[in-house]
Length: 197
Image 1 (spheres, rainbow, N blue to C red):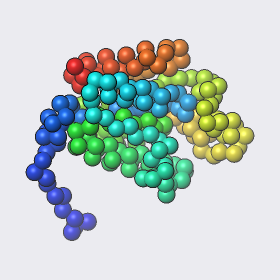
Image 2: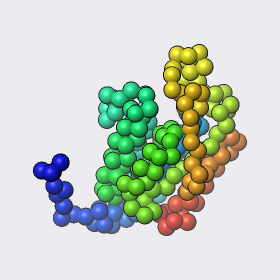
Image 3: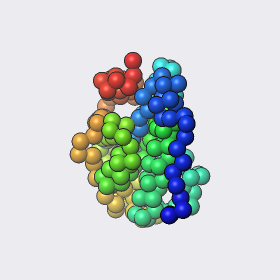
Image 4: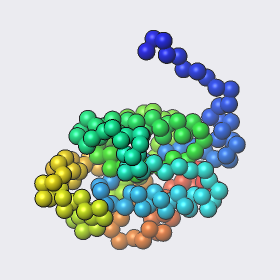
């Protein structure tokens, strides 16, 4: 590492942010499988695009097709998955983007690690809170059924822990409200922080 030196660029984060007319930020959606993270992140991205915002959505399944295709699902591999995504999100914030991520990211320590990569106010933890029973009922990918049958090991909520955020910037209870209603809550949270007009 002694021979690796950070190369500063003439065009700064502030320049890129100003050119896009927005403050970059990471919205980190966390919650159980089936809680609605990807659905809500996608719906929010659509709403932000309608407001003329420059965004990118990093989704848990999608990064496993490329960036993290070499990783398994044991605890160490899952931590590395989140670390890599955090580093990519940091670069995207440097590019001036509003970054949305949808990852179970079950451990507080790994979410805090990503928060630590970013500046003050650049990481908003969004806890998509849905009861396990409801997530199992939804089970869009059939994963809970496989986990209950012993076909999947280390599955969050079944035989692996989920550490709920203690003080998320946004806490969404996703067990009765509609997607548009929850997106409105998210947009309001962004407005309150001066991230959206």
